[in-house]
Image 1 (cartoon, rainbow, N blue to C red):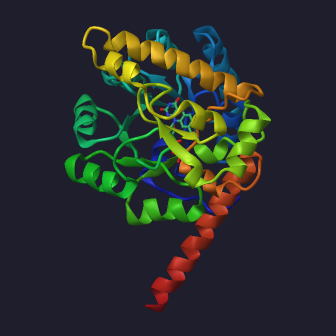
Image 2: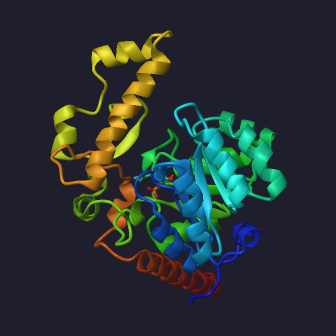
Length: 333
Ligand SMILES: Cc1cc2nc3c(=O)[nH]c(=O)nc-3n(C[C@H](O)[C@H](O)[C@H](O)COP(=O)(O)O)c2cc1C
């Protein structure tokens, strides 16, 4: 095994490398988490990837039997009908950390802190980051413009700098990272405590999704990633397949009008999300012409379908080489 990369993140969680295998709806599964933990990074799985809360409880137990660390991603707003149960299970089963997305992290922080479960909050701007700090979050995940899935409006470096100047919390950077050099730059230049990496793990052998989805991540490039609001009502990064081209990436006039109506907004959003996610789910697991494949621009770093352990080993090796190169340059100057 290569040298440990120490940051406050690796010390808090007692792991070798300051990397989170980011939670990915429909993609992350138990096996990927076990492999990621075995390789010394911190895996995080969306609670919604288990069909029911009871399967989630069993799944966490399965992972804990084979892995020394597990994080769970909780959607904390009303679109997650299981939210309360998900939180209860995280606390009862004693996961190591929770990543909150979408709604307020207040209740998660209140329930997790006494159990020493760390809470990292996804944020896309300063206003929300300040709220999370006031509530007592342990760290902020800066979800940048470069991120796969639902992304933020601000480029990574700018967002990190903003969060650093307006809050005192440690920052984890998410978005656009797919190489050891990328990890090195965020940790050494932007001074984050860890990075959260998603898209490059879509094309892993262990992922439970269709071969077509994985191969698309190999074949398509960053310029093929487009933003669509058609699927969930919020900007989502997807591969520009023929089907995405056919249905377009913007809501039509009626959808836009309905989403603006004060009275209907909430229901329209829930309906759009439900229908969109059904499409994403169908495309993720079966061969269909209706291909809506969620992925970020970092698919540029994918050249073949590989084991999770090989993907991680390459990241660490590249990091070490880049670090050595930089130390040598520093000594010369
Ligand atoms: C296919 C896919 C599904 C995702 N699902 C979730 C999710 O369920 N919850 C969440 O908080 N973030 C989700 N994300 C965002 C990731 O957790 C992470 O922020 C992002 O992948 C980082 O950018 P990268 O893809 O460039 O590495 C998803 C991203 C992708 C690509």
